[in-house]
Image (tube, rainbow, N blue to C red; front, top):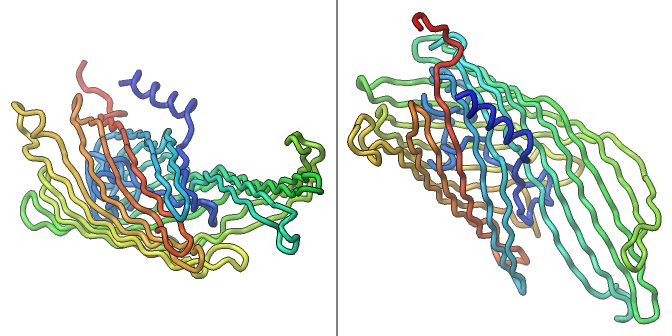
Length: 414
């Protein structure tokens, strides 16, 4: 167990957090990432009102109280996208570390804690355009090459508490940090005009603290069947940072001639007020079906005069374990999951709101003890091909590992 734990930590130290390669990640802070674990990806990304004792709940900190084991989770994701639009097509594939968390009971049944890292947003795009300079009579052309990379990461610390027999509360503290580098290279030239190249480079770096609060309630129907309720709230929170702008003159061959540091300014991006509710019906170690709704008040968030939509995400999913105690059939002990989700994104492109729809599947394969190998797959579509937009069809494959054990407990007998 110790060798496995050390090996997983080494993967974190030498790896990198996966970045989404969405062409729409030029907006705001980039593509916003789901804040759940690999098992949540498999069940449609529900988790606010769906507690589990086998995995870490990062969506509602109140549900951590059900983690009676010391639980370590890690996962990687491979993201493949196909782009289509008017006279446009392309594809891209990226992958890497995506999930890392550790949860443990402090006072079993009364107080559990968790910490880890989850990517909050991802920026990875490259757009290219060319055309005539207006007013030049077709003698001068302009080429623009726009690129962006980076993103923000949440280092979180969550705590869940049972304050009454069935009532739970929790708080997740996020330290959100990271940087976003955007460059735009403009080339202007013509038949009787030498080519002039200029690169505008902007580096935004953010770091600040924000909070997510959660509550949970379980209503017992029978000894092994329950109805669970959950709710989360995150207040509007400023994310402070700095912006550095540079101008770079390039030769016709692309080599750097001169760099002008324009200067550094303080910037603030207001993270939106967020409300979430969830409900699930659960038969212990057999099946669960749940639904989440999450709304974000982006209309009053962001920075400057940029306009955003209030966003809404609806997730529906479930899990099924055919026979948890069956010692003769391995596949009957596997937990199968599936679900779907619809997300109205906050970003507006060409005066049109973006939507993201996904269908999810997953399985948790039991291994030694109470640990598991967690697999998930998501097929989704983002955007559309009308109104000058681009449709992204994407496929995500998630491979995760969950280690459950009773650590930090002194043995009474050797």
